[in-house]
Amino acid sequence: GERAVLDSADVAADTSSTARSPGVAAMDDSDINQAKMQVQGQMAAQYIQEVMQVITTKCFAKCVTKPGPKLDDSEKICMAKCMDRYLDSMAIVSQTWAARAKAQAQMGDSDGGGFM
Image (cartoon, rainbow, N blue to C red; front, side, top):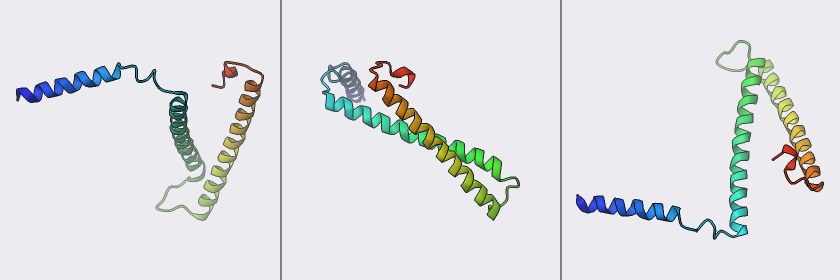
């Protein structure tokens, strides 16, 4: 019993001292860039999931007026067209945003003009 308590206290002490170690400061640019890319990828995946949820909810509300066990043909067509329009709109917005962000970066605007 006592030894187990000491072991877990030692582990907790080791963990907290590791968290305070200068290991983060020792990360090189490659490690930092890799971590940034990983976070950006996770954020992009989450964003896509959220967008798809919003699109599905909005299109379902618009297209499925009498929910039943299956979608009829007109509901399927409406859902497909609705989702296509949303995705096309999102692509246009994303392209415009990227072009503006690139233009801001080329102008040497260090704060990104509110884009980042």
